[in-house]
Length: 113
Length: 236
Image (cartoon, rainbow over all chains, first blue to last red; front, side):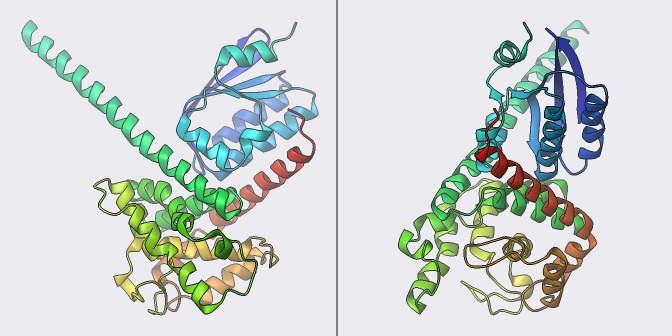
């Protein structure tokens, strides 16, 4: 799994490439933890290149959301591939997460001012 | 020489195009599998995280058995289909809270055959794996399972793996008629069934990966808790 992030209109956009699974979760957690420590504002996780997510991957993101929201910031997701979206739907996560079709839509919603 | 490079470039382009097309087809298959499984979930009213757990537990056990990467991929995407045959079981039987009559129990058991019929005749390795799992995930290593009463290694490997994953998940999950069994107690119960209900090699792999299995179990509990909290108090 690879991860890069960019700042756009005051929002951190994280680009994840590969699988978020039991093997890659330890690395992914350090990435998310860094964001909590550095108190970043709103975050968009771009899932365009995420090919699979397992239960450990989902749980790591939910832990992040809880901590992140504690500081008043929001987390959103965009560009989730259909195969992956069916996992979000099965687990009913689609009902409780901020999910946008495109990065532009997510940015529009989360950008300040 | 320049013609050589031109051919090489064309070949590479064609290969990449083909590879992309293949990936798209593969993704569509996997997507359809999850969507189909989703339909069965709507009818059965079990939790959606059950499917994710079955995929994760089965993949973890398969990995503990040192199966190939291809096997792991197949089992990951095919295992959530294990109960797809329940789509065809009459709802009044499927949703009966308790006390199935012997006749109703026989109908219920048919979900294995009905599920395998859905995938019958497919040439896709993934759908063939799904068929095998549907048909054999209620077989028991000692030959007392159903529908075939198959024994030992006559039960296909994927069926033997998903059988353990499914029972372990049922033990540790809450159902309308029972409380969940504690993780460690469930592990003991599984271990006791080695050579009886389950293949000893599969039990061995399960025990070998106990730590990861526990992590998966905890992760899905966390997911369910998060969803419960948010559905009551939606902040999005």
